[in-house]
Length: 501
Image (tube, rainbow, N blue to C red; front, side):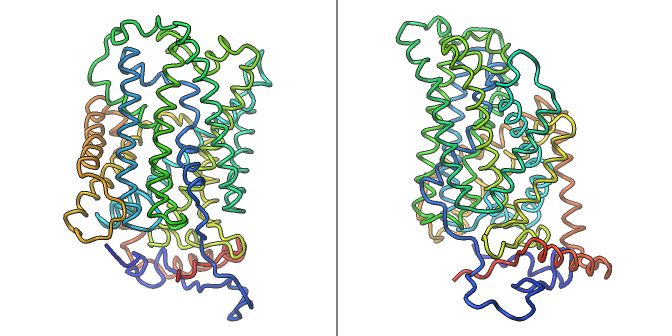
């Protein structure tokens, strides 16, 4: 399906529309001789694509506290089953996104697919919640884990001061923002390095765990499906924890326009990444249970550290460093991918125009990258981030489920659409049903948190009509918007992307 950008339907001089031409205001009408075309380059290769997916999926959770799944299942056997099922379901979702990404060759992920299938209102609501709350809160959470574990070796005998954690977190977050603002290539290279660090950290846990199994340490797997009772209504929460741990398989679709040969690279990168992550996650949990029983795992605040202290001796001091590097990789990959979501939403007219501009020399979406910095800093020094994420976790899976359901709709609405990669219909059907079923059950099992998240999400509806539909804004507002946009253009040295050949 082809549609005109939303911005073309908004009256001239509206909230998102300015009179910005394709050059810096200070350059007047003179075009610099021999200037390179200003656009995002196709620099994401297969290896870089794999590193984006793996590097973003594997964060701190699998190393720090995978107890959420165990807590809501009640037994070791059911816990491992949920980890496996979540891996398979995530693969189904990833394969569905591979078809969407090779059929709709636009960056933006969930936002773009919802926009193409369901229209501008649900797409705007999606990006509204992502920009204002979900992404800043999620980035702040993983950044705090980075700050805590990078300082862990220096505070072995005492508690780490909270202020020190937040200060080092702010520094790490700023480094990530600067890196993604300066160079796509360097950001991708560092992501590859950090991905290898993550896989090394997982192997450090898996290999001793396998050796324990060979030695016959299987006592924690006896009567694996027996344990404390857990209500079936808690299974959606177990799935939430498991699916959250696998979340990130969709990030390559956020940068489709920058992927080399996307018709082959996207499906291949997704399949390789999900196989590695699923096997790694399941084996890591198996390794934990060779040394730590269910009760000890539930009491531990850092399972990987507890595991390494029992089996690796002094080498266990390296584990916090690997966890910190893993968190840094998730921060980098998340900022790299989600900035493209904001870039595309701005290009379509759903966010301020400045966010769809590119640095004239570095060819990075500089404004879309740095817009996250102040928002994340506010979240970093504010209240309970975990509760906020719980409020809005249902919104993430609701919109992902809708995006995959859109694939089924397109099969019937546009049967002749070019589909270089095509999955059996039961795969998107099962995945979208699972997402929507989890959302429905969460309303039953945790109505308070889900209800708050639902209300926060609905604030996007009046915002859509106020900022997008209402085109009779005061003249002073239009003039101020244009002046702010032009001033930011000059300060940041950015211009709108030139049309691609």
